[in-house]
Image 1: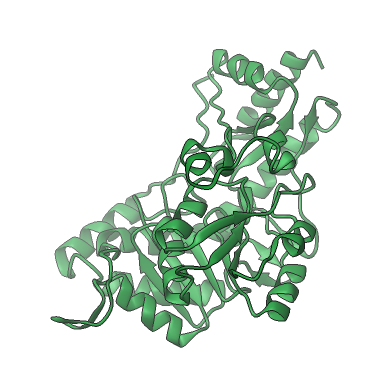
Image 2: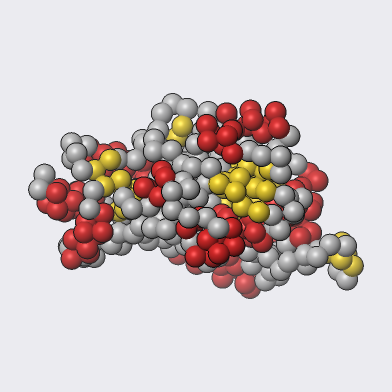
Length: 365
């Protein structure tokens, strides 16, 4: 069997042709395809506005700047990719953390209530691995405290929480279109979704050098626009997102069926009527994680660790904020035991079964 990669983006002739048409017929930056992509993505998510930007990190950064978090604190999870917290710093705020919970690896709503302080301006839950965070109790405390809620949906394109798509529930949602995500623009790209017209106008300005008119600028802005070529690619991808997500759920069920009786392996939550995940990653909580990764590699099965160092224990966060071991024990425990196995729409059933057979062989099951 050929090597099985962790992820592989879908690239079709239709996507390539769309890129060619955009480069031949449109402005190369924020042309017609970019504006149509925004309209279509907003309609898909269920918000009034969607603003295309240069990356998922930029989406988070610009949303927080537009909300005015500078000089305040933003509360998030330490168990995420570092960009979640970096965006807080880049927006001029101080990152604070509440621990994850073991049931779904997302931000723990109970710990959130305990961690909110007088300087907390925003809450930033992450829909980790494509599984929606439990938003209702967080929305309740945000409303009570006058705090904004920004959804980090960079791993959760199309996921549903109580009948709504994530990214449409808080004050804003932020997405990444990096090539490993559930959908991509064929490179870096991001999107902010919101129903707030004032916020949308501010982000539109911030991403474009702070422009009011061509040569008039009334804020310090950024250059974080989406290329028309990438937008054209993304528009085609968006049309296939639901079918790809459904295929991911089928693959997840097959993994669960094949591995359900292994006591050394804890499966990710499969969702419910109220929570529909999209399995950006299929992350297992396992014993002897690093040895398993090495064993899979010898069988030409790619795996990855998301994430081996929780954000608060990254060298720069220790240096800047004085975090140390023991601050967030659940996140620290997860960082030593999570492993992601191959997950992408074109993954074949026999490849899934081979991965499972290899995992079972490692554990002698």
